[in-house]
Structure formats: C-alpha cells, structure tokens
Amino acid sequence: MARLVAVEGDITQFEVDAIVNAANSSLLGGGGVDGAIHRAAGPELLAACERLLGCATGDAKATPGFRLPAKWVFHAVGPVWHGGGRGEDELLTSCYRRCMELAREYKATSIAFPAISTGVYRFPQEAAARIAVRTVAEHAESSGVSIVHFVCFNSETLAIYERLLAS
Image (tube, rainbow, N blue to C red; front, side, top):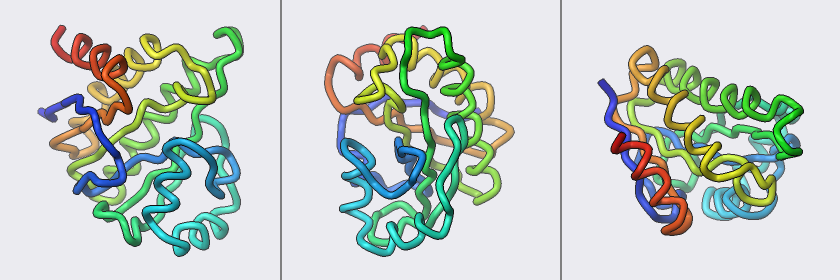
C-alpha cells in the first residue's frame, strides 16, 4: 500500500524518483511550477522537451530530471478551468492516471505531484485535490509506487490535502 503525504515546499528540491511538472501543451516551459522546474533542471530539459513535440491536455510525457534531485520529470498537461462543463474533471483525472502509468513504466517508486491546473489554469483547489488524491490512491498499488508526495505551494492548499488524506 502506497503512503500518500501532503507537504508544503519547493517541488524542485524533492529527492524522489519522479517529480511531476504542471506543464503547458508545448512542454517548452512557462510560469509557476513549470518555469521553476525548467530553471532548476537546466537547459538540457528544454532540449529534451523539444524532442517530445508537445503533449495533449490530459496526457503526460517523461524526460530525465537532469540537474534536479529527481531522476525523472513527468510533464502533465492539465486542463484550463472553464466552469466544469468541458470535461475538465476527466482531463485532470487522466493527468494523474498517466503519471502513475509512467511511474510503473519508469520504475519510479517515489513521486512528487504539484497541484496540477490550480494556478493560472484556475481549476478550483478543493475539486482538483479530491481528483488528485482519489486517482493516485486508485492507481498507486498497480504502479509500484510506495510513497506519493503532494507538494503544496502554500498553507491553504496544504490544509485541503491534509484534510482529504486524513479522511
């Protein structure tokens, strides 16, 4: 059984097998978590992402972690929130499921997730956290992951995850 924990911190500092990047569909960097991961990993990450030729919303692709303490980066493209009527929940679920599938494929037993789509993509934090916890818990055993870190960028997000993980 995988252990799921919530922590507040900088995802680029986590010593895990894989960190998840809340990427845009170009995979060529951006703001927020995406920009921080690209800066910390170094220019080799951008070159690796260019070779992937983008990624569809709801999907995820893997690259090495380069200068990060993580061996792998799973670039997940979450949905932009448009009110919930455009399949946003399903697309976000797909992001987390694909990352867990990549964990199995790349033999990652530890993984760190940001709160995908809750920044500039405006997905409501509570709903996004419920999807994240439920989807990861459903797929953790089959993926071979033993520990999942939900890395929160502030105390408000941390409180949501802690409450969901305690129930």
